Image 1 (cartoon, rainbow, N blue to C red):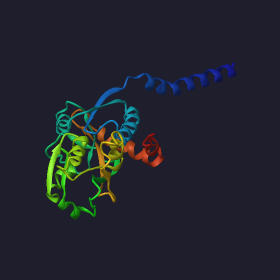
Image 2: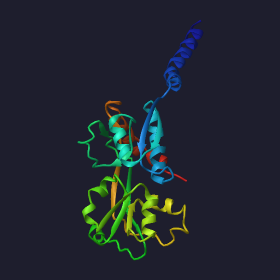
Image 3: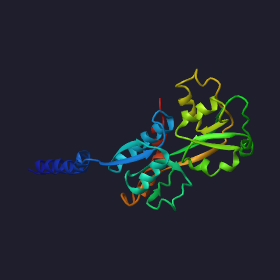
Image 4: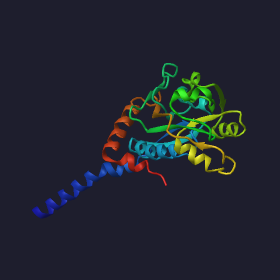
Length: 242
C-alpha cells in the first residue's frame, strides 16, 4: 500500500511540474509589429529579426516586421500605429518622440562605410568635405552631420543613391559594409564602377525602440533578456546568417 501511495505521489508531482510548460506552450502569443526602413535582404535586417523573433517569443510575443519609408516608420512607432522600431541609432531624438522607449541592450553594432567610385579617399570625417552625399532621408546620424559634406541629396533608398553616384550627380553614400555588399551584388554589372571603401567612417550602435504606451515595461524586460542571451552565447548564435 505504501508503495502505491509513493508511486501515486511521484506521478502527481511530475504532472504538476510539467503543467506550466505545457500551459505556456498552449498560450497564444501576443502579436507585436515593429517597423523599419531597412531592406529585408540585408544581413542587418536578418540578424535583428532572428534574434528578436526568439527573444520576443520568450516574452510572450509573436513578431511581425513591416518595411516603411524612413519618417513614416518613426512616426507610426511613436503614434502607436505599430508597436515600435526594429532598430535605430542609440542617440535617437526621443524628446520629439515621447512614446518611444529605447531597449538599452544594443541589437547590433555596425560599421558605416563610404560607398563611391575609385577616386574617393576616406580618412575620417574631415575627408568628407569635398564630397556630395546621397543618402536615405531620415537617417539620423547623417542628418546630424550634413555640414561635414560638400552637398547633400536625400533619396528614398540605397539604390537611388547608387544610381546618382553612377550618373555623377553624387559622389558617395554611407551604409554598413554588409548591407552595401549585399545590395551591390544584386546588380554587379550595373554598379561595376562603385565600390565599398576602407576603413569604415564610423561605428554605431543600433537599438530596438518600443512604444511604451502600448507595452509598458517591455523595453526593460527585452533589454534584460538580450543581456542574458549575450552572456550565454545565444545572441551570437542567433546572429549568424547563411
